[in-house]
Image (tube, rainbow over all chains, first blue to last red):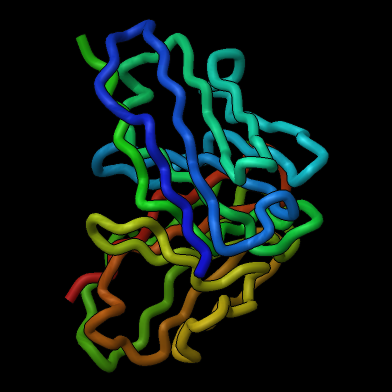
Length: 122
Length: 106
């Protein structure tokens, strides 16, 4: 069974940092591109960042470019999101999401984690 | 950035009725359109990808159509569990974007 388990969320002050992790299981992690998608309270999903399979190419939404860094450790089947310079508008549930097909840019998301809440507030 | 506009924002229907949800893209995205269903407190659930391909385990009452800029998600006969919020997403180019959602309510 494919599973994604996020961790690392919490309350942080504006300007602070957090590192989110997503532990993957049930599939060959290194074969799949992965994304982070966030959802602010009462709002729709917003794609944040993606990383390709083993090639490691990265992509970011303009709203987080220069502040967030996505990475992966294929030996640990884990996806990361380093978030620096956090702002109130970054408050959201952050989901990691698996793309629907391996070995390429098939950016539909067929499996999502349960999400981890990030709250940016003083 | 490609903007996806979903309409209507909400839809009030009864079980057994047909629902047609629209998603319009601000530029040509070929058939690179995805549909999700989301219920309160849950992550989105993949329904349809590449405009018309049902994801694994999705019932046949869900169908997708369209290409270019205009897309439709149709639920042929609403079941009680289908009352939820539906989002479209494109995968045509970076950045990926989602539509604002359509709430299907009883």
